[in-house]
Length: 427
Image (cartoon, rainbow, N blue to C red; front, side):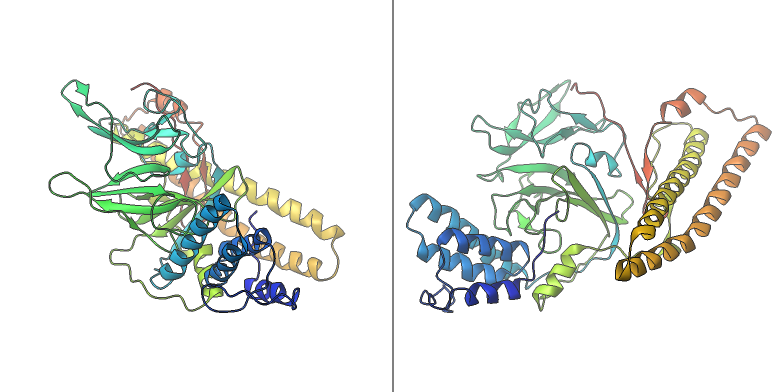
């Protein structure tokens, strides 16, 4: 987990521990403690990661003054630029409504996006023989006449590549003109916009999310950083707008373990309003993107797997069966968490015991609602089966069995994640 310190206190402590060494001036003209440039750089990075960008600018400025190593200075100047950029970007942040957030493995998180089944092809393949930590697959849905992907050049830098179908063959891969001098990953086209992540353009640091608009001549306009809270000091990537027009979805490793990422689901904003963030705490809270946990707004049907079957009866049956399976899995996990908390409660004491007691009561109060939803979903599925029998409708059981391993999570929330399947690695 990435810790978020209270940076104003951190800065004060840094100044207090070396009162005799308060001679250097930062680029803002304020006195800072004259520690080694390594110590100052570490304080700056902690400030930056904690969204205290003004503090990061001060510490990075002081680190530059204390540093005589030319290679280290290049790195410090780059980080200082990132903190200055972030400080500027905090003056035009948007405030989208957060619907859901779920952590998944870095290896296959993209399969939980509401995209066509089998549209992700695993790397390595002919388009991306090198693969990579943030490029485990290529997005290529069935029937697409153009494909965008992140491919590594001979120097190992990932650029956005493009190819289009020309009759029975494909054009030679070419690098998009908007590619930066550093890694660009997860290009996704939504309408006339191309969304991608990069660490080579104006941004906060790590991978930020950008978009550019396709011009009438087919070329692409300049990249624009989507700003807070989509971009952050962590790595942010793979942005899409759902086909139903309800959601904007992206991934980030903010507040995650090293081998996982959080997938964030936000309500789609037609005309997002940007305004300044007043404090470090407000910006930190905004970028935490905590969902509103309101069970009254459950709408599982909007997010369950959209079947590609031509037969609408089979598609209807699969959707209803997925709802039942999702609720069963959710209740099973719910009970497992409750059992673990009850076991912890027995050995806890004092304030920890009181907190656990409150959490247990809250979860126990939610269980009847989930169980009622499962009963209703089962009745609905059984009614559908009876209607099919009365009208002589036969369900293709082979197709139903083929989909039986699909994972559905979050049925108790306002959004349900459905795991799609990998497509063939061949193109």
